[in-house]
Image (tube, rainbow, N blue to C red; front, side, top):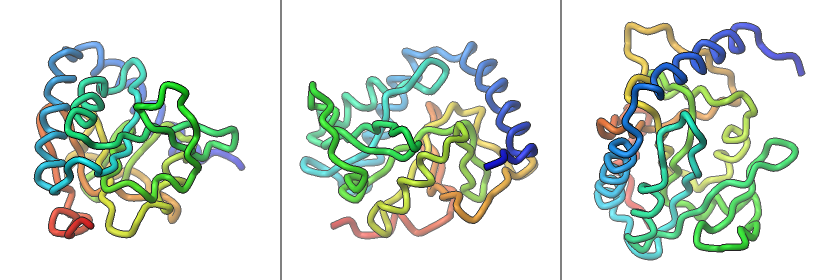
Length: 197
């Protein structure tokens, strides 16, 4: 399938922006701040021991997730991390499993909250990822009403005056963004008012 040149150019610009931004960030401070904000968020959502949250292991340049993932585990929350498959779909494994045994693509259905990576998001909840479509394939398998929160650097949350990100029918919107500055509800759905089972 041919790549959309407009999306490709936008993605290249966002990647360059991320390199600039990440070079100026204090990773240790961001790691602690993200962990605190996510802990408050799971408390607000009523997620405690036994709840399931999908997260990921950040790569260089991405907002750090080490303290965030450790904080979730310390809260008694089961953390699932993605395994990228050859077809760019996602399987999952338990972060506490030293063998990283695959749980199956449908394990995302267990999640009470999805924390997802990305390059940017606009005020309508349009998420821009790395271009593989992994999360666009995985997110439809989550339970209805399960919120998706994007983890970004503060400078990657676009404002109303920025050019909107292009959205295609298969693109999965996100409900909120967490950065080192806090959580921003994008108003896409009433996810904070949805009772969790």
